[in-house]
Length: 259
Image (tube, rainbow, N blue to C red; front, side, top):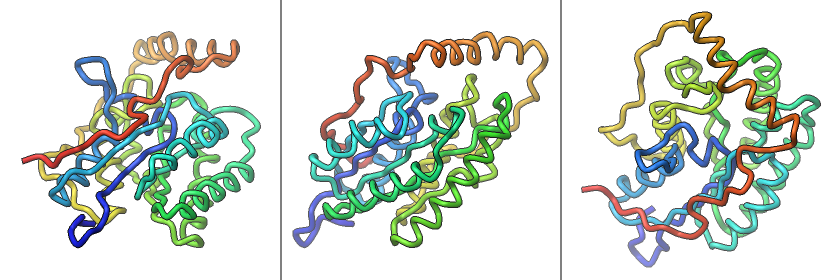
């Protein structure tokens, strides 16, 4: 993917929800980084020249708003590579319309491809081991991941399956809310994505974490109080963690390779 011989510079845009925005990988200034930012840096390092990067993902978004609000805006930037992940928030709600999610995913991938950009379908990591009543979400995720793999194979779309990465299921890869990846989890996902694109993982990245103890009863009570109850409150009142938020990189930023 060199820009020599008149080839265009790589222009990578990511669309999705909190997973792609980077929630859980908070920086000292209060911003979030996340796997997509890391992938952009990894690509620039691998090709040895600057790339352009945009990230339109916003936390809390269901699949329909992701497609309605982010897809055409992303394509209007003229990207060469578009990563797409969505449906995770839909799976957390009862009555998930899985056939609709799969059909909309296919429509999105075809729309990206028809512009000449390369679509990259991303399956999110599996958080369900640490979630209350996670079995139901896990069953939906297994179904969606299987369908996504079949869809990507049929369309010839690049695909990165993080859901099936058994290492990422460990609690040490997740932040305190158990729903968003910790920094090491984001690095591991970024490593998986770079591998799917044919790039090496930067040697200085930490993508493995030591196991952490099983939560105590006190830990569980604190978790319910600080994370589960507020989440239920937002659902009951129709609010979202992404209300009032805008994309962190709605236009191109240049990512230079590190020395």
